[in-house]
Image (cartoon, rainbow, N blue to C red; front, side, top):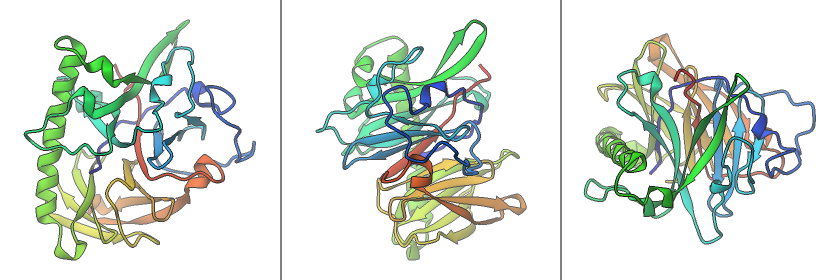
Length: 308
């Protein structure tokens, strides 16, 4: 199951992500690129294909792309730990890490690449053996200049019995439990016509109102408020179904980007009238972001927390 929420936005100094460096391949999109308006300032979108283990990170601010699967060492960040072995198949998950600060804007979005067969249950807490890496932004100071570099920690770093990474696993499992409960509530609530819940996403707007976007296996998106009361539903162009682990969602300024493995497109869904009306605003071909011939099965998005 894919469950994610990202609410923070910030500027990324993305020198690491230029395709000419960091192990990237040539940019097939050409030198003059008109950036798609994803309404995701500060976000990096990570696309993953479990069939090939191809991983690409797209930075919305400048359109740069980093091949995470082929990543090599770079100054200020460890990006080699994104690499996965041929026999390792994963699924992307975004963990919103609340370290105890009452200010929700300081909660940090992190990518956890779980094993493809991992399934959370209340009596089955995640351990370091259930995922391959944990990726997030590292703050890097250089001569008074602050940059945020995407980096990763390998799972064996969390094979500890005390300390910061031990406490991180406790927080991760707390978040998983919360998401599991929310998933159960949405599974019960989504209408019969949806043919079951495929996945969901939490969106918090500028007025701090919470909405849950539940995708049915029928390919329709159902929107609920913070009390899980029905608000609206919308259809997406060309999306006729949803399969577990073959889609992705990431918050935007006014709604969500939905990635469909079926269409190989990003569908920008936004809200109007205080969140009472939702509709598909536009679509973007994945190749427009990553280059010709690129495909993916799932997507997540995170941004650095720059207020710390």
